[in-house]
Length: 175
Length: 261
Image (tube, rainbow over all chains, first blue to last red; front, side, top):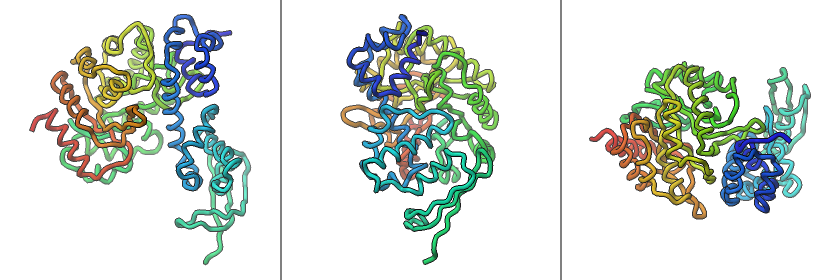
């Protein structure tokens, strides 16, 4: 197994809650398992688990703070539950790649939909799914369109202009 | 010079050219992409500094070329006296962690960061200064933190952006004397300061960048002013922006400390 340096090892621990739990149980076994190079082992094994967990929580909070850009209504409906739920969801999961922020928002919605489906704003989830997919056109009937701060029923229409650009339009009955 | 970190919610206040606001620190990443017009407008009215969040100078191996290119473009447009980045890593070869994490105080890391800092400085054709971060983790190494900072500034031939709030928070969370720490630094390297209020949660001090400056921080800033030839001070508020009068009062207080009445 290829040896890794302290920065790489710390990165793995900070993104993976299960790995941190294993580290807490036996730091030496964990640095062996990660194949941390000898020169870095002492610095890693002497990190207090509580400090490691707190630093990981800071990173998790940064991810959480990005969510309002994508799922503001869902977060409003989750209210004070949102942060606690996100910690449960995000502790062992770290979306990566070009669209990692959208993947995170989508993953969180899917996680919450299993336990508190009424909190999920379907029109937001549709938007995330279209952004991440490759369909040229999508049409959804939804009951939670936000139109001028009011919840409305209507049609949500997405169409893709090219690989990087898409548009959304909504149709809803006039009052 | 006294200024603030440029943030969108502060734009109307900044655009009104309030008295006492000499300069702005712009976060390079906020201006990646089509924001050139705004940048040109700000550069016309203010002295600008360019501050980076995500160059990850502490990651061994090559820098992210695209990020450095974008950073250099912002620097070119802003034409700052100097640029700055953190003494930290935000990504590894495997994962982008999205935020600042501590590096070990070792001579090997001095070399990694110094090489990266010189590379960025040369590409931007501007001097670079490096900032101390706050972290819940305190990594052990062959150097003390202040020895590490002194050796780093010497190896990179750069200045230090001393974040007074980060120093205060670390001193509380990790139990050391901030004045003793300050006086172990080479004073001529301290070029710029960051300051903003801290918060406390479950007994831990946090840098939420969302509070007014507390009196202990003013006292620490005063100690820095007496110790080092600081050239610029930036009030670094990111959230829960107060009324402009509150920010102006804080700037005035800092101005008295660093520039006299």
